[in-house]
Length: 598
Image (cartoon, rainbow, N blue to C red; front, side):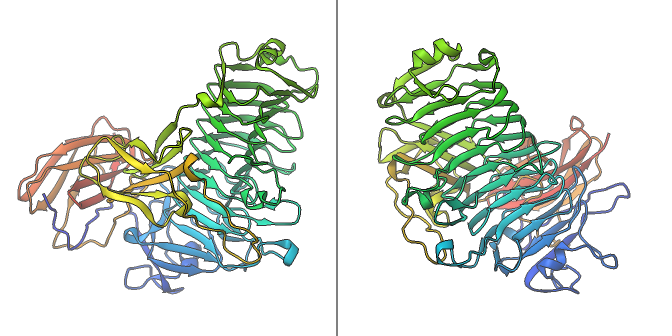
């Protein structure tokens, strides 16, 4: 089947309390303050982000489409959606949108407001001095999140001279998902400054999932406060962090951490699940450090893969901890684990077991007594790791993980620990790509040029590991080059040629052409939904329905006839709420919103 494609039509009938449809606002580089937001009268970027009493502004269920181009300056969004019905900001028709900070404000993009989704953007900054020893550094932050329910999705944030992405305690229930952050921070004579992420949390749960952060001057992720805020209830899952502090390591300063999870207040209910960490051979950086200068309460550290660091894994001053099913890898005399427990703490109450350790030497460090212990002494002294194992690093097997994106079908991150030093690794993408789907694979260290592209024929793809090209930090007074991780370790982005966004809104939404209309009715729908469209081919089609969190809740292959088709679907099993429908056939796609009522 081929749907007629002079326009891709979207029916957006949201039916809020007063059955008002979601509006679309367009932004271009030459848009104006007085623009209506139509495609013929676009707005400027800052105007689209503001809230003016006498104008029609984007709100719950609306979409702000930013047309391709470079947007220079600093921008603050006050857009406000509602829970489960956000306002969405995204590129128009998959065009490339770059927001480029020029140092005039504290942050390039500040997201205030509430319940807003920002996705698929590129945020970077103009070049400037990067070393305090040669003059003042304008340490402008990249993206700052300060609104409740804000989501930052699948964005690339790089060459930032301050913190890549920040989320204060005002960002209640914020989510950072699928982003790629690198070359953040600057150097002073004593250390690197500026982290990939700098977060805190008072109430609700911050969710940080499936991000890639690397080659920062400071820490990769810092969950930290000096005391003005709190460190409560946050989930860090499926993130890949590597080479924190590498931009200063050549001078032997920094000792930065891939994960710095603690500050000067107690940390509570912190969950570190299935994350990945890597430091290169000989690095003075650290892997995962839990806790800091004060006693903390509780954490769960489970399923993480932590490779190398001056301290590979460290936990400090927690009264409760679950530490299970982790893989911890060191070299030479690196401390595989380092434990500092609170005074008068019954240390045998940690649930610490079923971990795998690999090292050149057995170093398990008791910080309270300043003793290095063998694995046997560690187990006997604390009663931990009774069902864990220790092996030589020479026994390591390659480890490859494919992490599917939460918000875009056909998109995934791949992390590869190539301990066998192979020229190519084999990666099965059958859970990510359908057969005969076009794809591109990118090395994240050189993210803007694909290393592989083609048509997926099923099974495994051979990805090269002998890569050298890398995007160096921009700016002045940088005295050495950042090295590529080389054959031992690689991180990749895979994208379907369709690159279909599943939630909160699809990426290919255009203006409606009434001559070639896809009709979706009734909408709102209680049980049976009808989709009417005209087809020029009999190739089968696929209908998918996603909830507003990006989960696929309905999927069906369709037999299609040339000419007019009226297809009926039983959606009675769906809960009340808003959904995104996606009708695909070949390279044609129609997307639409659905409101389900009971």
